[in-house]
Length: 269
Image (cartoon, rainbow, N blue to C red; front, side, top):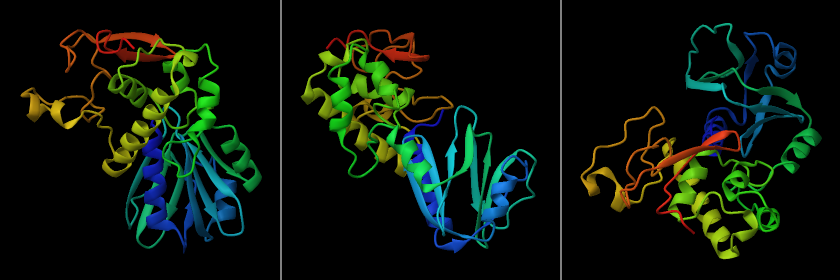
């Protein structure tokens, strides 16, 4: 499932390509056809991202709410758009660009009130300016749930997925099985700040890199990572491989319905 940086990158791309201009809206697949007909030719005048939710706003009110889920994908490119296949749920197009959405969990036309209600159910997002980490801390500091599970709970922290969860805990040497209530406020503040930095970099580069300069392949004389995820990471999808720092074996286990990756030697706190 795409993590929050991907959604914020999509928001940025749609803002730059479509905002303030009339857009042709269609649903070649047909499942969004009724709403597309209402929006066709209107001006796209707002773009927002909150966690893993993308919102495209239109003049006169209302938003297209998109959640990619496990199988959703986006294709954006210059005009002219290629012939649309019947897998395209939503196509936006103008005289310069097009965007095609396929396979999302959610693609729905919602009101301003419904958008506000959706955001109200989500935790603070490290990529949203002004979002308050205190809201997440209020839940984490009282919780008997593991910190690894809490980071994946979108009602606690929005936008963090399996990669950022594993990597930020490694970077701060935190045992993923520690309970939320055993985390200190200083540790939480450091995690939040690091997530914001890493995820902003993810928006810029359109991929996840979490390895510090001194641990990059060229600095350590090791081969670069080869993985369809891309990017240099410490533990994610590196089960049974040696840790870049201590040389110990990276472990994996199921947690919160996803595979957790961690180094038992480096993450003892």
